[in-house]
Length: 441
Ligand SMILES: Cc1cc2nc3c(=O)[nH]c(=O)nc-3n(C[C@H](O)[C@H](O)[C@H](O)COP(=O)(O)OP(=O)(O)OC[C@H]3O[C@@H](n4cnc5c(N)ncnc54)[C@H](O)[C@@H]3O)c2cc1C
Ligand code: HEM
Image (tube, rainbow, N blue to C red; front, side, top):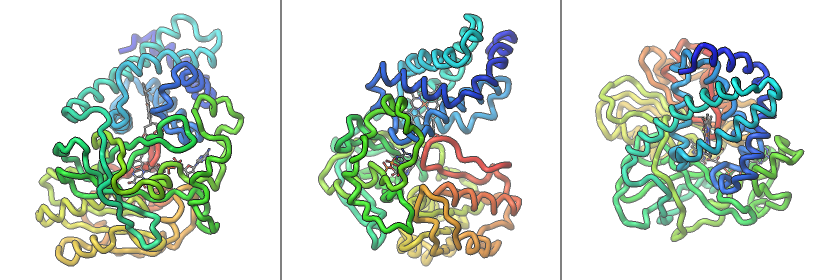
């Protein structure tokens, strides 16, 4: 722990560090990635461009320092980070590098206030947090068993999940032919691939979209058109559209005056390449399933489960529905899905609902599922509020809610549930980005 004096020193400098959080993030990543360009292979270049990743890291460190006496409040956030790090193959030696450049960035902001004593206090605070993360990551890697690095898979099937072809499932079979570990429904894998025109590998997470099986995994990818749904764009014309300055590295972007600027019609890099260019027989590298957003299939309780999704948010929820309904424990389940056009997995869900009297399914046509990047007012809110108490199991005070979709969608759902006095601890959200999704309690 920090001594009382060290805690005081850290606390005294917190306001200045908070005030200059953005600057710290920029200096930190710019210098770190300049000196260690190999780390560009780990960081999502878009999250660096938008500043989401630097903000998430700095915010967590500052939150940790200000909560050092009450770290249990950060448990959920730390678990999300540790799971993400393990999924990205982050190793303890990386923490040495981050320590060096982060403390340097703090010094740049604090100037003379960064005395040797303050520097030592912050270094100690950083390592307290780093030890918590690496300790947890070590356990996660141990649980992974022998598979703790990248593993090559072959695409054995490619299946459109909508008639528009904007959501596509990929069945992935391990090249080594060995049996695959199981996972908790809701967990994700990280994939990495080379995007033409970009110097560094691109890493993205995709939820496993089917119940576990030993011979293959399935992921389901939604094409990120990066544009208003009202704009008639053919996303394919932009796929090679790394026509503007390529996002070649966060180091260059950090010095770029366009940092944080939005080019609204830029389609997603990886989802478009996967959907357009990757075919059956092609290979993809994956890491072991991970993630803290899951339904514990071994939990014997029979409390109702309500699964609420939009767009690609159906991917982590469908395995939950499938696994629990196959267990036959009689656990009541509601599936509530919003989609603009076709709802992915609709037929499969309806089949489960028809054969399982404990499962109810509701589908809404909504504009909300369309653009993950844009806020939309929608009819969905009305549809959702119009759902009866039984559909949402609001009458049962132990119902568990799992919500996944665009941020605005999750905000609306969360708001409605909280208004109906659902305990926030019983609502779980999966954010398809970095940072945390929080509803005010
Ligand atoms: C735990 C987890 C699970 C996930 N599961 C799934 C899943 O099952 N299915 C699924 O489809 N997705 C899933 N995702 C999302 C997925 O990882 C990708 O983020 C998604 O496919 C988009 O990636 P992309 O490379 O196509 O887009 P990116 O290239 O990462 O771009 C994302 C968006 O940022 C915009 N953008 C680009 N540059 C800038 C800039 N400079 N400023 C502002 N905005 C910019 C783009 O227009 C685009 O809309 C998951 C994410 C997480 C974290
Ligand atoms: C105490 C040290 C660290 C803290 C507090 C920290 C914090 C975070 C946070 C908050 C996130 C976002 C997680 C999410 O919401 O999904 C994150 C993601 C990430 N971290 Fe760390 N991290 C630390 C160390 C490291 C190290 C040592 C590395 C490796 C160089 C690293 C690489 C990454 C990467 C690559 C991501 C994913 C970025 C993305 O997808 O955009 N982190 N980290």
